[in-house]
Image (cartoon, rainbow, N blue to C red; front, top):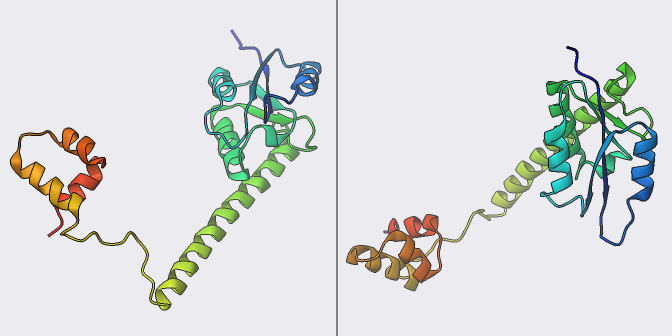
Length: 190
């Protein structure tokens, strides 16, 4: 039996004070049978409506949004989401962004241009970071965290508590308010 192609919608506004009605109405008119939504900033990683929406999507479905900025936090995030769709046979369409419709050849081309731009942006960031580190080293600055002196009070306390062997590492970390990684770093300071 052939599965039915579904139109699934996703709508988002940034604050509780904003209204989803316009997006919801447009998505319903465009044929979305099911619509997920969030009232939360796009910068937030944990968006329950989006998570549930992405879980619901299956091969052959089309995810429809009112505008692309409703879906992704950034161009990179958006490209990551939609690239995942392509691998799973899921389509993507934006109602108000013109040619962004991966169900068509021209829409797929536009999306691939976005993907190339996101990759270009990542590479530029990497190059700028490397250039900045090189320039800092040339000025005599070395990155990283400052070395901790072996006579630091917490270092000495961690070593002593560890030698006494009457507390677990977790208890030592809690007592000194340090992480396990910091504890091991302290123990290995000579």
